[in-house]
Length: 321
Image (cartoon, rainbow, N blue to C red; front, side):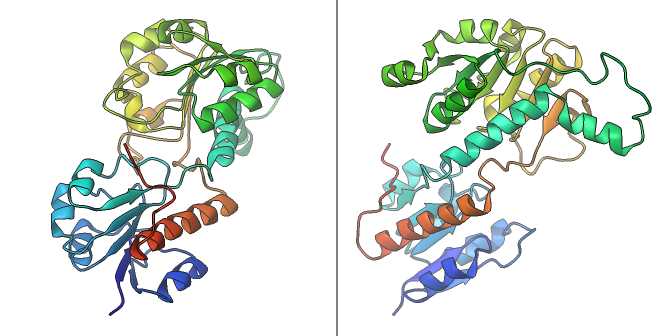
């Protein structure tokens, strides 16, 4: 009897066909609608392997329904959607897709930084709505990126990739991390600083740390108050790291100059979210890794992880912490 696999989102045919050669595969076919919780609870009961995204919460109640589950393959680097401890206690392997999205997410991070600094979305709407009737010296002026100071919170793979891009713009790069990266400091001419100093000295503060109990609400009112009034906050990591109420007040009261967000605490974010009413916020719908090439690589890696476990082999990207 073939082992059973459930896929929580519609994947390209070449990825699914590869799994169907070996397993009995079912897949949620709707592209615009996430799999309902009640459907996932039913589908997970007999499966040996679950292929999921960050949008699915794989928690204790769901895992209790999974009688035969051997592996949860997350198509993402992060895995805060999964109760890893509960999975491990039940003998379920959890995997992720590190490495393949580093450069693409760094591209997006730097693009968001530049779009926010130079008010690109606002300028585009200004033109499209027929407001460009003349030119004046201070019209739609933004902040310089070249030569500015960038502070990176979380110097992992993506943080280092963003630092490399910043060096191309002659930026001074500071970073704060739970441990120092001496090799990166030397190779990229980075300066390690304490968290408060990074906030005070940076023209751009870029959040690239994982969401953990320690980093939840890491950027709140106290931290925002330490930033320059001309500073820009960029978050392409996870929404829960930045306190959204505190950020709203800081932007509304011009305590910082602007912010660029790819992530929110609750996703998809409501169009009625009050942050979306602010002109000094640039936001996009969690598309950090959304290039065709990278999303295909992520799907391939997640599928490989799942298949390795189901075939009795060690998954290359098993979560071990």
